[in-house]
Amino acid sequence: MDKGAREKAALSEDSLKIIVFYDPAFPGAPALSEAEAQLIGEVANAEELGERLRNAGGASFVSLHAPYFPVDAWEDILAYLKRGGGLLSAGGAPFRKPVRRRNGAWLVEAEQTAYHRQLRIHEMLRVSADPVTRHASHADIPLFAGQEALLDVADTWNLVPHVSRASDLPHQMGSAGPMDAHVYALLKGMSADGRERSAPVVLWENTKGDFAGSRWLFVNQPLGGAFAARGGWEALAGWARFCARGVTELWLKPSYAVYEAHERPLLTLQAQTLGRGGAAGGEAGASADGRNLKWTFDLRVERETKGQEGAEEPFRLTLRENVGRELDVWRIPVPTDVQNGFYRVSCRAESEEGEVRYLRQGFWGADPALLAEGTPIRAGRDYFEQDGRPLPIVGMTYMTSDVARKFLFLPNVSVWDRDMAQMRRAGINWIRTGIWTAYRNIMQVDGHVSEDALRAIDAFLLTAKKHGLQVTFTFFSFTPETWEGVNPYLDPRSVEAQKRFIRSIVSRHRDTKHVDWDLINEPSMFDPVRIFSDGPRSSRDPFERAAFAEWLQRRHGTIARLRERWGMTPGELPDFASAEIPEPEQINFDVQDMHSGKRERAGSTTRCSRWICITGGRANSSPRSRTFARTIS
Image 1 (tube, rainbow, N blue to C red):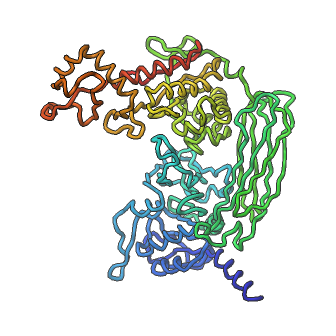
Image 2: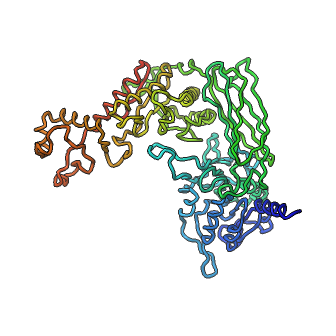
Image 3: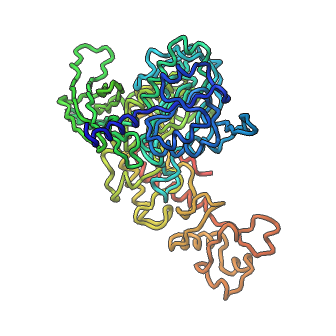
């Protein structure tokens, strides 16, 4: 073997190295021998751990002492994870109790949040196991399939993530952050009635940001006395190898969430190995030695028929493709003429190293008859009513469990179908959703709304109808988009664009019975840059100044009366148009404010109500449209 081959082999061996933190003298040590620990990887005690991690190019770090960790090794742990190293933490809440060496003994410090917050774990909340009767593995990442009984049913911890500190649209308060990590409950605590109550084992796959490419697996409860007898340590070694491989990001997407009758679907499959060490610029490929890995993708598309006769044969396709560090995209035409109804798309993906994942998607064949079924909900004297009977409301806000507010841009009808079925089983009958951000991504050019987004809204309403859920759809979150105007409420250019935006959506649902339209969630007035800034904030544009002057004249009648009430001279206030729009700090809210000559409050509610009447009343002109103007007080 030449020198280059030896160096490559050494690199490969190092990249496969799993470092196991196990120290019988350290707090939280599980009941196992060092020989058993060595079956998992290379063992390091508390005093050795920092140096081992500092010098490792390693694939994964295993801590068997959670929630305890040596505080002197913390910076090395953090640096290792930022280099893309994997993490398996077992035994309890991770990195919660720092331990330091003092006078030859280990001293446990007070429980703290500072350390795990550097891993983007904002907080941890204890979850009781009282309602849990058994464990179930994740259907799409079956790492724990057949291993559900390894862990006892016990109290666990809920990790509260805050994985992104950035905004993808900084000028919008409703903006979401980038999707830097994906979180999966690999082992779920189930109650007797089949509901998911806890998640004792959680996987974080870091796809972007400081920890890009690394997999973190958290076993957030003690392993238990019977863990070893049940084959736990052999299984844990497999979990460590899983973390060592790093992240391979896989997406399966239809070109549209709804297809019209006889259109043919198009699927997109994309894959990229983010890999161990990719963030540090190392030679991290899909495998330990930098090779691309061969993946096999078995796809299936079938229409949900609910036992109908004459069901069509599912579409099946198998692909075998190399997956590496650069993004690969495969377009897959589906030779099926779409009919009305729901189509399920599934894909079993398996790498040559044996890793298995299931990708699930879905789309609808347009079904206007389904949307038109039933009767609208109406407001009775005391209750909402449907079909002449009172309808008690049990509702929640929902923007999907996979991509949150990005659900109209990355629609996954399969996820919506699963979530809405679960909500319906829990007794929910009404959901609120809508557009909280990225309005220009839906209508970049005034009057021309993206067909992708419109069909995603159609699919969302179809899925809700399938599960008997009423939908309140909100168009704006905090401040309406101005498009090319300057004032979101008063500029005619902005208001006309908003009407075109709204009408493009509601005009597709004139006959839809289970939707009501909400113009705005929580209106903030008026300067979009300073929303919710301790009261209304003026944008001081010509439209607002003119509206303020008109309101003053209507309220006071004459300029002389306004001067008298404001205590101003003709030179200071020659006419209504000269009145300055006050900021909150200039308005008289308190008896002490009389000393500084503050003015009265501006008519912000009046102007907002005018916007609601103009935008909602004209955009929703269909007699079947139902608009909840919740914002008028």
